[in-house]
Image (tube, rainbow, N blue to C red; front, side):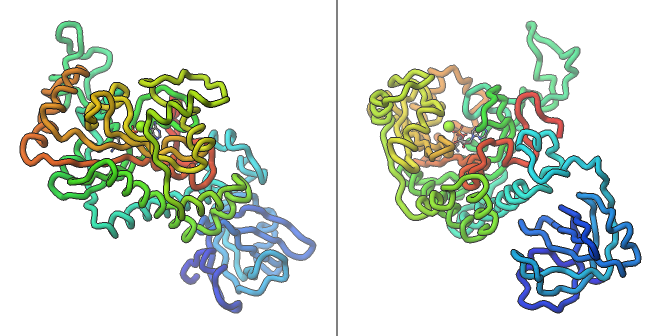
Length: 461
Ligand code: 4AD
Ligand code: MG
């Protein structure tokens, strides 16, 4: 048997007449009067290759009884297909049944609901929709690295196990080797000094603080890694484990930060249109009719920018009734974010300069004494997709803010040190990778754009 060729390559071949070996899984098996048709999919592209198996095959009887989902290795001749909708088909010379599947295979039907497919997350990559989602995800991950490589950013791997809760929201998953049934105690609380790291540790909620230290050495850096948040919100946009891209730039203010975010976001839009044509066309047809025109518009027009204070004015004037209150000083909820980006602006919008009391300790305080140099990028259908800020580079103000917020400086001495020697204005942001994929595919639930979603009460596979 020759070398395996991917269906994607075969279907883009220039000529019929070549002999090929194709391996994949039967999506459908249709037994005709004289021959059996097998739609063979190997995940390399949306389309399946039609395999035509005739009675001359030594194992034809078995082939004609093949179940959906069977793994096959087919050798055959590529010929022009007489059937509509496909250029080529493969006339099988041999069909090797590598791994049979019977009628208990759960993916028999052509269409299943996304809810059902979440219960078979180990098999859903073998469907059209999830095949497309995870191909797009893979391409976008490559695009992220390409963008930053082209711009000369250093790629840094920040730790996954940390002692700091960067965002200060108390959403850290604990990492410990202590005996949960009988932990060592001091004064009735767990003695983490006796734990593996000699201190309390958890899974990172953000690589930002460590990223800042690298930005203050390498100028422009980014991280791209898994992030964990024990937030018990069962929404369509929150996962307990998600991936985040966090660039950080030295000698950069909030406007430079927003400019990078916009360039980056538009680059990713353009990239997916150029590199995932077939899959994006599928999403446009099956999932979200306005998808391609929306991505195209975003890829080619400048983003709006609005002060938080102005956003509150718009929301107060709105003729819709929101579930959550609108008041200067309160955080924007998803419904508010979507109203602003969908109804007020009709496209992506940066909201900048939020009240300092609803934002993290590290954000740079503005001269007005009540706001910080924060920015969120809101996009239609998803809401907040990027959160970022200029950082407080002035040691006294940073320490003052930490004291106000009750953050123990002892645990962050290494972070405040960066403001002690060679501090400089710097800025960065975090792009939620899953929210990006939701935006670019039209998929409406975060559980459907990450291979094995972790959400409250769900970590089985
Ligand atoms: O706004 P966030 O919390 O910002 C930070 O973590 C900063 N340290 C980033 C920085 O400035 N370097 O999170 C950034 C983005 C959000 O805009 C959202 O897209 C995504 O991360 N995100 C989540 N995605 C999925 N599930 C969750 N639970 C998420 N929480 C945040
Ligand atoms: Mg945020």
